[in-house]
Image (cartoon, rainbow, N blue to C red; front, side):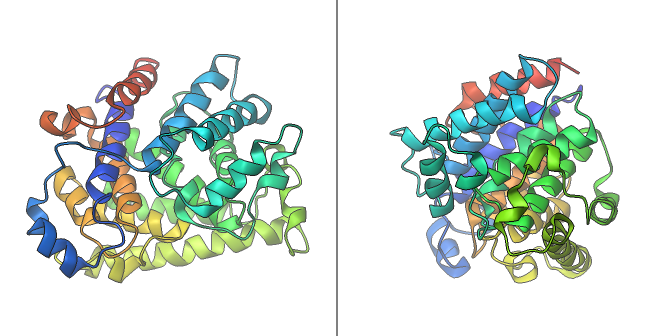
Length: 337
């Protein structure tokens, strides 16, 4: 990753989050009336991020801690993840309209001795697990099994719905492929093959008995539900890449992004519409009717992984909130390659 893909992805994630934070919950006509033409949207002078970036940093720090103790494994990652999530839950900076699923699960994770599976919200596939998973796609030296397992585990601590697990896995895999230089034009096809290959694979090593808390007759049935929903959104995404106009709200093609698979697809669509124009991609994502900060956050992670740290204007990166934390993690992973 000589292009400093990890730094690029983390900065892009935060920049997209900060650009989309003021537009979240607003219709496109309202966004245009408040901020002007979407292609000219500017980052606020005080570039404040939402809980999306805060939790991505929590995942990143947990990965760093786990990596200090040897090869990444569920027993090494679960503790640091849990500690970081609880620290975020208690933090006075946790005042950025976080989702109810994260708050409920983190409140339960705070209880020492409680198995994490009992905190997991199996009915929720909100995008809260998706917007924070990109760091797992950036850690060098992981096997495919480690990357997939870690992506699903970080989701499962809060969002235990099988679609949340599968969408987090897909997002981390997409970030990894782009960081490795895979051409964006073939990306959706590769992700579809990945989903098909993993469609019935429930990883007991990383997820334990999570599935038993669902109504499914078995673990394969449980995880297949999630992958099938992701395969459905990948089909919609493939059509949208061919037919969607860059001038229209991306949410019309892939959904409003409040749920995991839609946030993933919306973020990827905006990147794929403008693979070599990262700032334009962020602006398109932020000018959307849905979960604008999460969609733009994912767009930024994909674009930064593909293009590297120099993709972003220095004027923007110089004033992003948590800049030092983002740069420290990026440098750690970029120099480890």
